[in-house]
Amino acid sequence: MKMHALAAALTVLLMACACLPLTAAASAPQQPVVLVIGGSGRTGLEMMRAVNAAGLHARGMTRDGERTSRTHPALDWVTADARDPQALRLATQGVQYVICAIGAPAVDGPDAPQFVDYLGVVNVIDAAVAAGVQHFVLVSSGSAGPHREPRETPRLGYILLWKTLAENHLKGSGLDYTIIGPGGLDATPANKEGLVVLPRSQYTGATVSRRDVARVAVDALTNTQADGKSFALINRQDAETETWREQLHELPADATDTTAIENLSWLAGHWTRAGQGAAIEELWLPADAGIMLGINRSVTAAGARAFEWLRIEERADGVYYLAAPGGGQTTEFKLLASDRRRARFASPTNDFPRTIEYRRDADKLTATVDGTLDGKPVSLSWTWSLQQSLRVPFLPPQMQH
Ligand SMILES: NC(=O)c1ccc[n+]([C@@H]2O[C@H](COP(=O)([O-])OP(=O)(O)OC[C@H]3O[C@@H](n4cnc5c(N)ncnc54)[C@H](OP(=O)(O)O)[C@@H]3O)[C@@H](O)[C@H]2O)c1
Image 1 (cartoon, rainbow, N blue to C red):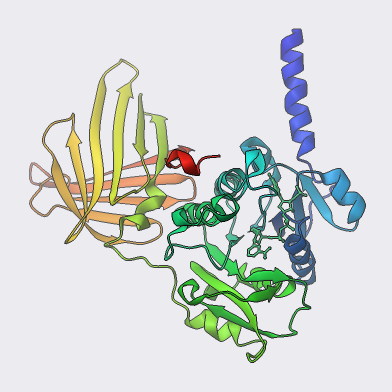
Image 2 (cartoon, rainbow, N blue to C red):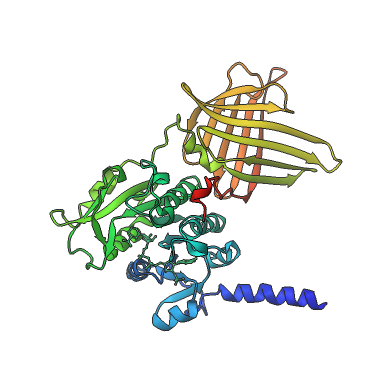
């Protein structure tokens, strides 16, 4: 083996070792594994204890597993930095659930919210998709979310903006998820005060016990009532300790309004497929200002090529998909139905395709087109793999760090 090949092999080995669990790693745990991102933090530690108390296996992720396993030797730790996608791919192996409770340690520089609360969390979400994680709980903030204008809140390095963008990425990831927006976190014991779940549009500021946040987060991993929901969580002395369960039940899931293009964010990304003598790729920019832009290109081994300009746009009467094969005439398809993983468009006057459906399953995207050709029904389907999610939003320079 040549020296540079040996060095490369050693680097790969060392990277793999850096991400191995540091304790209790000799054999795989019997119980489902919950990876707590930020498990060494003040809320994360409460999560670790609550996960184990619930009979699941908590594995905490920290940037410094040696230090953390010295301070908390009874717990299982894995070392990885959320800004390192490769390390996250290893850390999420064999993991069934994720709770993400990381927080930026600085307001600017490489530890700022832009790189931890946004890019880091996006990396974690993408790794969870690739690992086939069953449910993802994100600890965000009571003051973040789509109903506010976080670009106008520069406090703490635009943290509310970055948390909101990370939430959008989770909503569009195809994962089952719950987003908890805690009030100001404190060290009050669990169950000491009443606990309230409320829409974040009604959150005006309050505190909440880290332990109460932990028990709601652990419950959300397997509680179907929490799936697809985002909410604020606060303590209130006059509330019952367990009424939050009814409030969670009554809280509607995040909007899946077919007239809102943001609900198609799961389509954004670079999707590729190689097979049957052709490489086909489709690239979608995320929705912004009511428009998503896409391109599709097919190249055969013999060098033949085809391409298509695509766009999805919001109009007064709904959302439309526009396709211009070869850059030529555009055909319009109206969005008939969509949810967190599926969108169906139709153009009743077009023979082929008459309908176009996209469906996302974790890191796979399937497009199915139906219609008639020469009077006969035809249905074609392609499945792409997610090559890369598009993660860095374009922002004015004053918001960049
Ligand atoms: N404090 C509040 O009042 C409040 C209110 C609402 C929401 N929140 C949110 O609640 C969450 C938890 O807050 P907290 O106060 O419990 O947090 P914390 O004690 O400050 O802990 C932060 C955690 O983030 C981890 N972390 C930081 N950068 C990382 C990176 N690049 N890669 C991997 N891990 C990284 C740290 O791990 P290592 O240092 O071990 O690597 C630590 O475990 C945060 O998202 C916070 O924004 C806080």
